[in-house]
Image 1 (cartoon, rainbow, N blue to C red):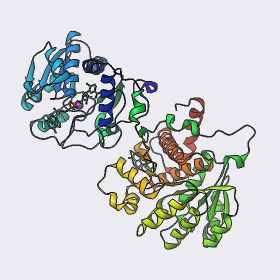
Image 2: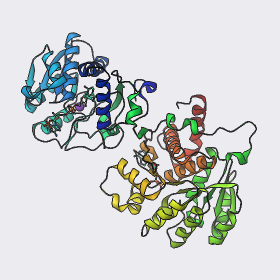
Image 3: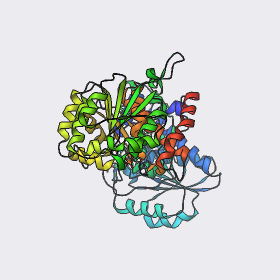
Image 4: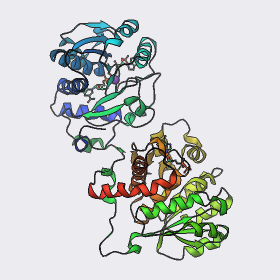
Length: 506
Ligand SMILES: NC(=O)C1=CN([C@@H]2O[C@H](COP(=O)(O)OP(=O)(O)OC[C@H]3O[C@@H](n4cnc5c(N)ncnc54)[C@H](OP(=O)(O)O)[C@@H]3O)[C@@H](O)[C@H]2O)[C@@H](O)CC1
Ligand SMILES: Nc1ncnc2c1ncn2[C@@H]1O[C@H](COP(=O)(O)OP(=O)(O)O)[C@@H](O)[C@H]1O
Ligand SMILES: [K+]
């Protein structure tokens, strides 16, 4: 959540890019202490929103500029009548630059950080300001600081973290040794990757982004390539039905069904593709699954497709412009061949579930077919499927793994989970943040694959279609709410789509 989404923008910065924004701003004539003054001011305001003057506030400052922001906040709060107690992790003599200036301007005494002493005063604090480490954290925390963080996390106190919860890596969201668990995190100019990637997101609590006088024009030079997945990213690429259009102008999606006992996944996907705007959706079913599908389908059409020759035959209709294969389809060499036919057909293709796992033993064969494909390709692996296709990326953080997977495969990759990352082969990436945990339910991924296929059928570019699909899936999951099962997601898309049409910001 940000104070003002228009001002904050959807770019997500690495700590290095934020440092660059800072340098460019200072070079343009805004002094560093002015930036720090504003940053500390936002932190003080967050405290003031939480409790009244007279309350006791603990400020835990570290040895760098994150600590400097803490000193500024302490001064502003002291002047506003709060009772501030400031602790410094590190030596006063080593404070330098803007942080040193902020320290020198402090009208309250600063105590050395003694974990036992801090623990003893924690219970009386209305708010603890965590200004220990932010963008400059470059190695795991240990020793006295780790002991202190443990005490803060165990205490029943309201923690406001400055820039990042101390211990969270701003680039990857990883916990570096240990990390503060904040109720609120106040960052500056733009959110950072670590605010949205897990486990960082869990440590941040409510997110607030304050402006400190950095001109957004610096972003033209920095050219960030990761974004929050918000409607700003894809809203303008979402085709609207034209008054003089007809169903074929909205695209025709083809969804492949598994056999008689595994046909539900494809029906879920097909229904979702239709619900999010494909003009027509046809389910291609093997002869054994025609009856079961016929018994369930109404608006979704059904066509029998026998074997690989059947797939070739159905593709003779050029109006079928997007295809989804994988949900409930079965893992087999024949699935690999079916995928090969689709990739060679020039259609937009979504590969999910069994279509991905079928290439576990020969992922390079899949990637070379994708690179030769004339149409856009989207892969939608969950963690297990991702590891099967991209074993060489094990151990990488989620964002860099998704980007490498997209570059290696030539497809847009939707690396699913609570912090789904959508990555394009050119490195552009979106991190999703609106999915409720209720979406972790059987068949939910099938619905997502169907939504993306439906958007591709409407000729939306692949990265935007994948990002919008993930966002719609999350928003529909939230709208359906507790108790949702996969069947509930597509119906819940209607109010979500209606809101998007009325209010492009979603
Ligand atoms: N950029 C901007 O636009 C603006 C930035 N602002 C603020 O500045 C913050 C960044 O400041 P920063 O670069 O000084 O880094 P910071 O997070 O204070 O930590 C560095 C210090 O920690 C130390 N250290 C590191 N790891 C450690 C470990 N594991 N264990 C122990 N020590 C460790 C390291 O010491 P050393 O490596 O020398 O031992 C160094 O002294 C940013 O988060 C934001 O709050 C705002 O003022 C507004 C404008
Ligand atoms: N904890 C969670 N919070 C939010 N979304 C989640 C969570 N766990 C899973 N999801 C989402 O639910 C969907 C599950 O997909 P998948 O694992 O393929 O399920 P299935 O194969 O049963 O359809 C994905 O879109 C994923 O991002
Ligand atoms: K911090």
